[in-house]
Every structure is written in structure tokens, then in C-alpha cells.
Length: 183
Image (tube, rainbow, N blue to C red; front, side):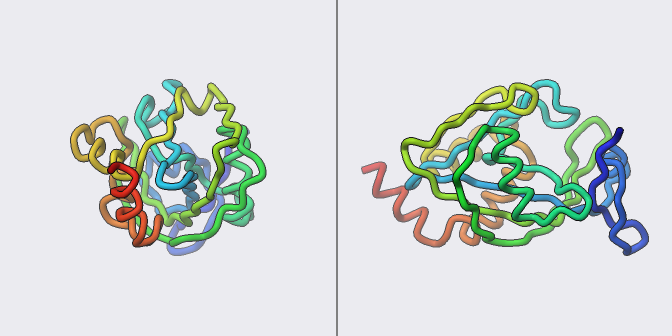
């Protein structure tokens, strides 16, 4: 059975097969979550078995809600399914739209609800190997520098989020706090 996600077809929100959505470049709903611990951001490297952007670094988790699934429910569900993370309470930070070529003839044209979740040092992370090949915590400022230096290592949406929506996702104080933690 295929996974049906909410996509716009002829300006009407319709359940469409996920792979078909990406092959046709249909505008569709998505959810992205950033988990932070102080000024560190938890990022993931996508599993090599993913049908697009395998092996690239992305935000903590990103996905598409199931048909008729609320974005906040989806955010919590995917933290658990992709990373084994429970007990966090993601807060809605923004809704953005972007369109990006993700290779293999596929396009992500997403309307994304972005969430931020705060964690403490005791957070347990158990990646699902079908989804994630590696995770790591990285200082926000170091992450920005790494994306600028090696953009080919990151998903298109990660680059877009950091370049165009960072203040709305992390808040205006993140850059300042990250610079203090580097001193």
C-alpha cells in the first residue's frame, strides 16, 4: 500500500501517493523539526536507502503528514519513528514554502510547518537505520559555517532553512548566544 500525503491538485488539497508527488513536483504539505540543546542543533544524515537525497545532512527530522494528520501530531510521531525521541513538546515556529530539485528527476515543492523542540543533555536518541544513518549535535554557528563551506553535504531544504528562515526558526538571539559559547 502506498503512502498518501496531502498535495494540491488543481488547487484542491487531495491525497496523492508520496512518490508521485515528488515525481510530478506537486505542491504538498510537510513538517520539519529542529531539536536544540542550548545553542547546539541535532542534525541527521539521511539513510542511503532513501529515494531522494540519501546520505545528505538535514535538520533533526522532516516528513510529510499523513492525509488528515495534524502537523503537530506528525512532528511528534516522526521524532519517535525516525530518532526514537519521546517526551519533547515541539513548538510551531513558522510556515514556509519552497521548491527545490532533489535529484533523480524529483522535486520537493513543500508548504512546511516548522517546529522547534528544546532538549536537555539527557535526551535519548536512537536512530531508525531505515531513515537515518548518523546523528550529531553541532553548534548553530558551526553549522552555518559548515553549510557555507560544504553545501553539497546538505539537503536543499536545510540550506534554504538556514539561509532564509533561520531567525524565525531559532529566534534572533541564537546567533548571539552561539557566538558567546564559542569564546
